[in-house]
Structures are given as C-alpha cells and as structure tokens.
Length: 349
Image (spheres, rainbow, N blue to C red):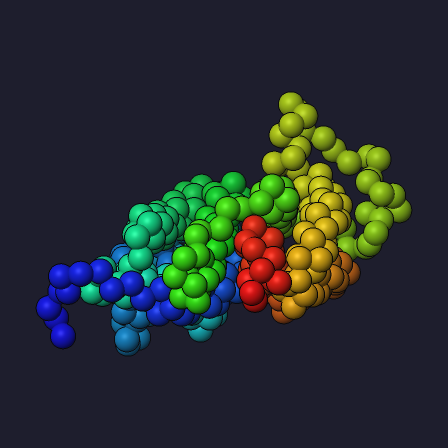
C-alpha cells in the first residue's frame, strides 16, 4: 500500500473529484468569511497560532483569557466597550470557524496531493499547477493574518485594501481549482485531451468580474453599502451632487464610500452584459446547460445586489450576495472552459 509505483499511473478522474470537493470547501469558506465580516467578528481572535489555534477555549479560564486579549484591542476599547463574555463568544465563534475552515482546506489539499504524488497518479503537466495552487493557499493564510493585524493597532477595523486582496485571492484560488478540475475531467474521458486555453472573451469576462469583486470588497470594508439604501437613484439623484470628494481624485475610487458604492452599482451591469454574451456564445456552441446556469447566476446576483441595498445590508441577503458571487464565478469559469474547448458536436463525435 505504501510502496511507490515505478511507473506513472495517472488518475485524472480521481484528481478532478478531489479538486471539486476542495472547491466546495472554499465556497463554504467564502460564505463564512462574509458572515465573519458582516458580524464584525474578524478581530475577535487577536493572535495568529496556525497549529495551537485550532484548539478552542475549553473552559471558563480559557475563555476569560481570550476575552482579556480582546479587551486590549482598539475594537473593544473604541467600539464594543462593555461587551459581555457571552457576546464575545458569539463573535469569536465565527472567526474561529473561519480559521478552522482554512486549516481544514489546507489539510484537504495537502494530504491528498502528497498521496497522488507518491502514487505517481498526477498526469504530466499538472504537478506544477497543483503545486502552484497549494502555494497560493499557503500565501492566503498569511494574507488573512496580515489583514487582521491591520485592525489591531489604533484603528478598530481592518484595512479595506487588505480585505480586498484577501477576498480576491480566495476567488482566484477557487477559480483556478475549478479550471484545473475541468481539464482533468476532460482528460479522464479522453486520454488525448489537452488543457484548454482561456478564450479572449473569457479573459475579458474574468477581468471584469474580478474588478467588480474588488469594488465589492471596498464596499464591505468601507461599509459603503449603508450610505444610500435606495435604487436605482442614490437619494434623489443618480449620484449625489453635494458628495464630498477626496484629493487627489483617483483616491475616490478606493477610499470614498459614495464613489465606491456608485461604481459597484453600475459596473455590475457591464459585467452582466459580458457574462451573458459569454453564455450566449457557449449556448451556440452546444453547451446549453452551462450557458443557462451562467445567465441564471448573473440575473440572481443582480437581484441580490439590489436587495442588499434596499434592505439596508440585511445580513442574510448580504451573505447570499457573497455566496452567489462565488457561484457566478464558478459558472463563468465553466462556460469559459467550454468555450475554449471543442464544440459539443465534436466532443460527442
């Protein structure tokens, strides 16, 4: 069982199934991350302990010790003064689950990857891809702590720029895993299948959707969703005429909550148009189910985005919006992969 084969024995189907499972875990991680952000739980764990931090407080003394660490932070002193231990346990729970999922995903990726490598089951050309994804995952853990650390000194909230980097990295890893799993699945069905190249329309669509994710992260980090809760107008105008602007002007696209919300509102329709165009192209190539899922995800995400605004950023709707963003990305990557490969008729032949 533990002896290493002398010859390569590729198992692309098993690898594809494993990567799909990891992608599901990352989707859950993204949803929990949204809950953590919306409940302002991210600063409840003030230390980064990659190994020992997996064990939660087990008794009242442990809980009191964690609470004492939290009470020394700017968030407690400036925002949550007087918070009870019971309330602290609630916010600690979401941050603990978020970090625990990160550890679980790391193990769920690293251990099977090591086993597939030992068994020489990784097809030629895929070892560096899987190793690269593992490296991005390790980097993501460090980025997560780098983000949290920004809120533990002076200002009681994490940097919205670091939050954006953390979220974009999560989406990038998610998309990369889905793409590689689709290549491996095709290889499992046809030993002569080659890795698919991302088509030009797919490149444009992914660039735009990641730009939209960037502004979505800025909206979350700056709490810009609370500035105006009307749609399509922001108050009585498309954009409030008396809105204060920052200097130099480009700063407004990063640090001004009004501008960030405005861009996020209307960039969504540009992204939707390009994504639907990609879906139509996939439909015409014979991949109708994938096209329908993509177009459906686009419409659902637009609706959820509007509902988030009108609800005043109600937590369950906002979490659904972030989860649907991940599903939209999955549908977009899948449709782009279909579009870059052979047409349905050729594939069937």
